[in-house]
Length: 163
Length: 203
Ligand code: FES
Ligand code: FES
Image 1 (cartoon, rainbow over the protein chains, first blue to last red):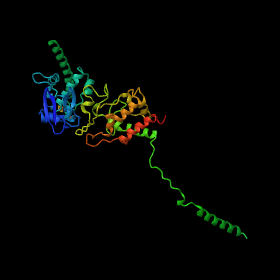
Image 2 (cartoon, rainbow over the protein chains, first blue to last red; image 1 turned 90 degrees about the vertical axis):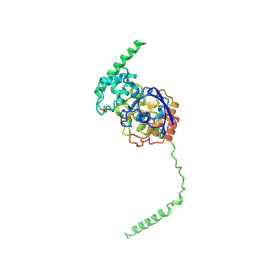
Image 3 (tube, rainbow over the protein chains, first blue to last red; image 1 turned 180 degrees about the vertical axis):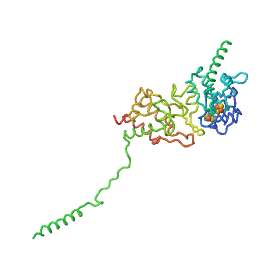
Image 4 (tube, chains in turn orange, green; image 1 turned 60 degrees about the vertical axis):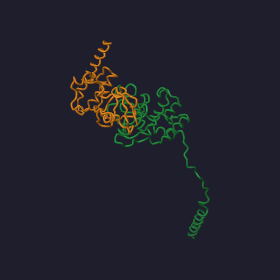
């Protein structure tokens, strides 16, 4: 069956034999966007987190049929080298990753959190950022999340000045 | 001369025993009455059938008293620190729908149904007796202001309620257990209990 979805701002139509194929595999194997990672396949680790209509979703447990007509954002679409998303900028500044495998999932979950809670407290972070990092980079991630909130607030102020 | 009363006694005993057996009715003397092999469903039966379902883990796990959803047949706290949140859907960015969709996922073993969420705190059942659960069910201040008719519809038609009979597989691919009463019998029990006045038996 054909499924149309907007991925990182570009309308894509994919031909999929099984509509229950996890969105993760369509993103990685069909659309060749390898930033989103497979960790557990059980919605338990968060490595596969991406945004569907701006909400964090664990794509290993999300049948592609539900993405029909929706807006999907992966780590590749969050920002780029020239224009990084505040979360990406903060991650670079705080040198968060160790092996890096879990990081795209954490960054997408953080982007979703900042959309809802622009200035998250430690408690907000504890409740919402529940992905797993086997390298234990949680301490640096927490600093980066607070930094990302600051950068995003600055960006909003600068953008409003430009208008 | 002393033996005469003894003989008399023995003769009378023999006659007595003979009469007892001779006069006893035979099997064929009884009328055999066919007993109908159905049990009439009383209001109490309906109540208990309904309660057998409501107190099963598939229902109870999402009616917690401590704001923490439970999982599995052991009803352990939901992994990852998930909790009720402000609106019964978890937290702002990591909500029920981050993982649970509108149907079961047979690949990951994550259960799903339309409007997946915890029951509201006013409908916390965990740790309550059957009578207390029934009271909460009927009390409009706790049941979402539902009338008896609305309760019947909710309990017999709502997809999330009926998910209990189609709970999919767990993370190991094993089918989840279902309530001890069939879906059809549960629906009948709910309808009969309300039709009989929704009496809570111990009251
Ligand atoms: S791979 Fe999806 S949550 Fe682990
Ligand atoms: S950086 Fe290695 S798993 Fe998180």
